[in-house]
Image (cartoon, rainbow, N blue to C red; front, side, top):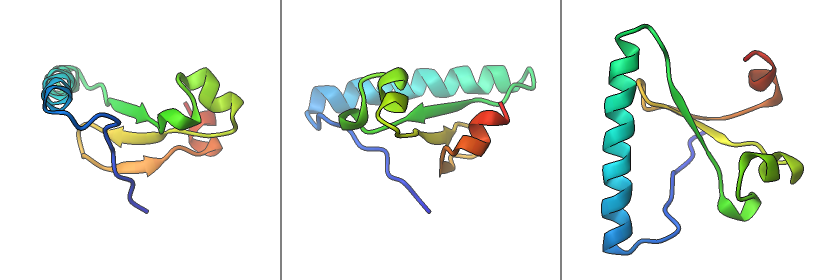
Length: 83
């Protein structure tokens, strides 16, 4: 199963801001990978909740994006419990 990360605002300014943010996050991931730390980002549809607490309250789970492998997967209760 593959999920697509989508922007809510496709304006040129928003696209540039998101590209800059992802560049910063990727550089951070590279640096912490040198220390042996694996990093992922959790993302979700804002219609399902503004924050992670709202998301869980609405009985939804995020999508995990692995910064090293660039793979996406649905977060499940089993993966959350294994943290």
